[in-house]
Image (cartoon, rainbow, N blue to C red; front, side):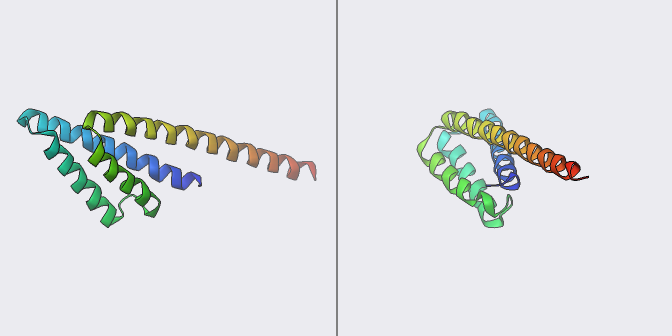
Length: 114
């Protein structure tokens, strides 16, 4: 996995969390059932899966989210996705740090040749 892939995955989780919050807020005012909220979440996921909105690297995450929407409450779904998003951010930062270190080591080796 590279930095671009982890960035796409994190971007997907961020957008999915925002959409869940939007659905919760819009349904909260109309007092709709959790099943109706989940139906709308599944539609959003399927729409973005077909359109490949978040890139090809995210298809696996979308399939996983479809399974979680079917098996978890919306509250539990939000908690899990927030953890996934945070983990992606941590991995991204670690990968950037490693890349920075590799570049510095390479530059030091190049400079030592002169």
